[in-house]
Image (cartoon, rainbow, N blue to C red):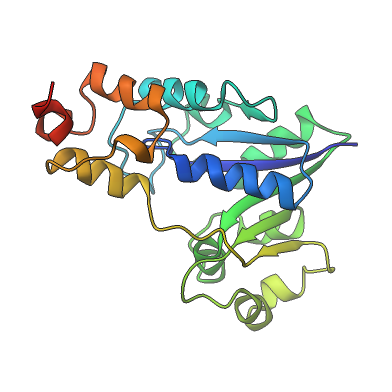
Length: 214
């Protein structure tokens, strides 16, 4: 039986922090695999800046050299506009029926569940296990203990909390803003993804300081 982490995100673009996070979680939680699950442009709650094809290509390039990392296109293939994390987990549990699956998320998303911002939240929490990463200003234990939904579904193994040395400030948004506003982001994402962004002139590349040097 393998332990598999499910890492969903827009990856718009994938960054070195995404890779560091996945690798660190795999090491600390003794995961055998981490599945990268890029979300679709069809998501109602996302305002993505890049087409699915570009984001998929960059994630594929970024994780190609790590045998623990897998890429899955479940969300990108869906026709429905309302694609839930619960549906994704149900799909993956059918693909890996003998394995333990853990939904990876930040503590901010744990708060969103409590505040009712996630569809099918009760079934998602009651039927799955989670690896939760610390976020500045959020006490994960207090969030869980203050929520009937979370605390009543915690059997001691539901939530694996990672609260040391993993919260990092560099985000996809930061990188997009750097490119669009004449900044420099060369060492914040994988080299092959940086080259891909340059080649396809994504994220306002023509405004970046890198473009002015070419």
